[in-house]
Image 1 (cartoon, one colour):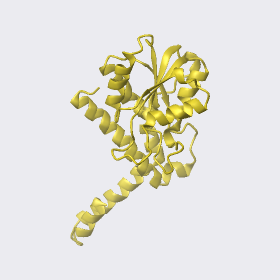
Image 2 (cartoon, rainbow, N blue to C red):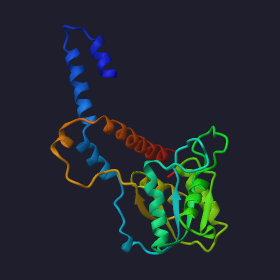
Image 3 (tube, one colour):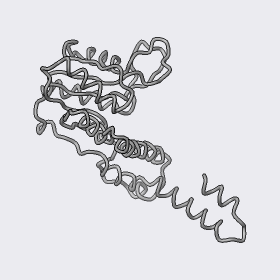
Length: 237
């Protein structure tokens, strides 16, 4: 939009109008190009970990950020990142972890009546899936990845029997999460979920036709990259 406004304000007889328009067209093409975005995302996401290669651990740490608040608040609504939840449950059912720690507070600073911390919502789903309550630990205070690490460590101080961890979060978020946990002295094994880079070979229109959906996905990825750099600069990870 800024480039198009610049083109509109540029002199009609000058070269800058054409330059602004060309720049806007290139930005639209590359910013909406599925193939380019997928290439970058594949390098950013941590690779999948096969179940057979994962050593058994005392607990999986499930990071929240996968629910959405809707009315009525008598049920749980999952968002795109629901793979985090299902993968943690899978680890438990496969016998790879003995317990599941859920870390995550309220998804909004202005909760609605009846809204509960996200960790408690996911704990409800685990119980519905048959996980015994004694195998679920809830950390309901954190609002960001740094607090996930800090408050999980505080929770573990009350459970000295938990010595080994597996960290379950979205593949594009796993890099920053691992760094934050390492910063507080925890070194869980990574178990990325919610992969957003497709594996299949794409058709020709995937390479050439811009997609408005990719612009949205770029926004999420850039947000994560900026978050990672910011956390590094201020010493969170």
